[in-house]
Length: 616
Image 1: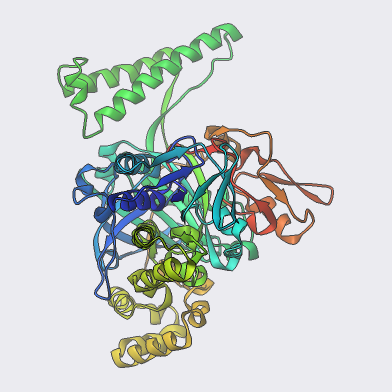
Image 2 (image 1 turned 30 degrees about the vertical axis):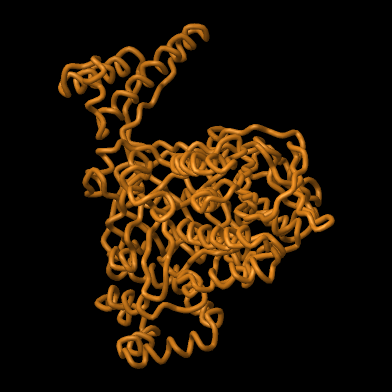
């Protein structure tokens, strides 16, 4: 059997089905595992009284937490309501801990290769493995045979398929298993990775060496969109991003870079991300040749300064002594100060407060309560994770990676059963997988409002004087205070259907107006000690790594449609522009987020082509 897609869900499926002593291959379009993957992201391990959840440690071992290249164990969880420089903070840690075994911040280009190593080791014992650099272009059924076609290999036959190829699943499209997700069914996310020394992160966020914290943002910082910002602490970086309902962005188009920039300009965030950054000043009195020599010398010295400084502020700073370069910490500090002095006196380098961006990325995210496949299978294909439209979005509750892993195990169990009985028909394998997915507590959370979670949320905010801030909310709050009325209201909402109450829960009032009022009335003033020098979009794109393909993987359906005109703003790397009355595409800068897929013939690039993320 074949697994298509080498993200965390696909790799979990390969590991699980191999551990069940079955042979499987995983096909990944990226040149290496992890280069096509992006996440916010927090990887959770959960438990639930309503049923079994299959967690990452069930697949990759009980020692996952101590062996995996995760970032930080998230122990604190905050929501910040913003109104310009006024901030009101609510501690949401109880919500984060609800049904949680653990939650780690992760970077997928570090974590997924580790998953791949374990999955490949298990798969190779049974004649399977991982094939990278291969793009699946079609799947056909001929004479009761399932034929997989790719851009790079000879076509081959399989008995069954797990589709783990993400929200923009080509497997779903070429087989007509489901239509493209609509803008009202998905969220759009943009993110930057920010460099910050390890010990400075711990000092600034009040963490110990293994702990992390997560921060959410709502209010005027959203630029009047439904959604919000996030900041997660990694080991020696920060993940800063914005996640907004795509329909909200279509109604009020702004560039994704603007959403990121608005976060960076907020004084609380700018203070969180700031660092001492060398700023080089060129000497115009020198000849061009001498200027070049000075620039090269200064660049080398800045590189040395950064390497030693970041290592000095890391938990592994003893390696500098063990290597024999330095005798003790005082000598390392002295060396840093000496280089800093040389840079300033010899090369005119100033050291200023700023921040350092490493990578810019974007992706679409499924809103499971709106778009999960009711029947996540088609013939002998099982869809998992994002490809099946499965993800949990409920206010501050955002989960995706763990959902994909749970799906992967259930799909593996279904396929293993089919292999043992040589029956891959949809009414046997597909229906069984569907029943397993419907047993998942995650499916329940996508279908119903969790009463206990809502009660916990109310208990967290009950002492905030929201009724005084906005009298229109007083009646609703009085109803919420009465547990019996709250229970009746929830039962009625779940009876009518989750989708009926969503316009009330997910509104501009909830995400923008109330948080802004909270900040104005109850918040404290936060001032920033500097003005961040925010990179231009061109600067951000220039830092990305691509293997360009001369042939575009996207074809525009209607060059004059209103949707495509909005893409001129909404495409995160400005691949679209207007020539006369036509919207035209320059595909080379594409980050493969699929933001334009609703109005285009959209495919992933051929194997090894396109974006290569270094962090993810």
